[in-house]
Length: 125
Figure 1 (cartoon, helix red, strand yellow):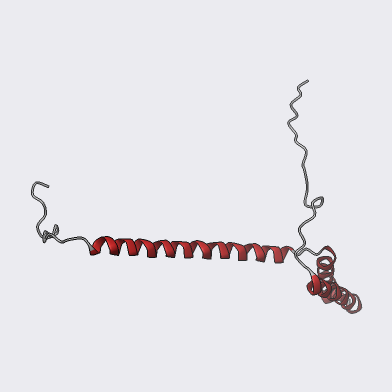
Figure 2: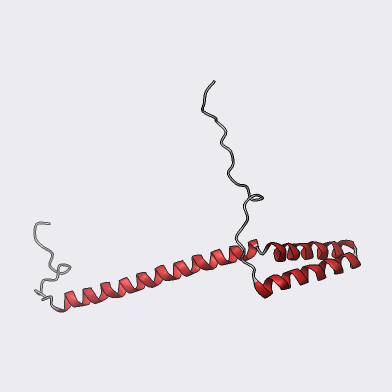
């Protein structure tokens, strides 16, 4: 038998790992209260609409209990990506301004010989 195991154990699964909390304070309390309220309304109403209210209330209640919201983490990630892109654009703009200043400084001391290569190109080419 070989000591090489072709199967590697899974270190963590989404159900084993605890996601980072991103819902705190009043937002979490509001999710708990809103979830309980929506679940109660869904149970009283019944039918398809009541089932939808029950599901929404359950999601809000789970959000309040766990303190984690996947939609909020996705929005935060996209906001961070947008901020990173904005910072890179600002850096590129600053570099472009420096390059323009360097080009203007270099051309301010340049002298023109009067030879326009478009009008009188070099002979032999």
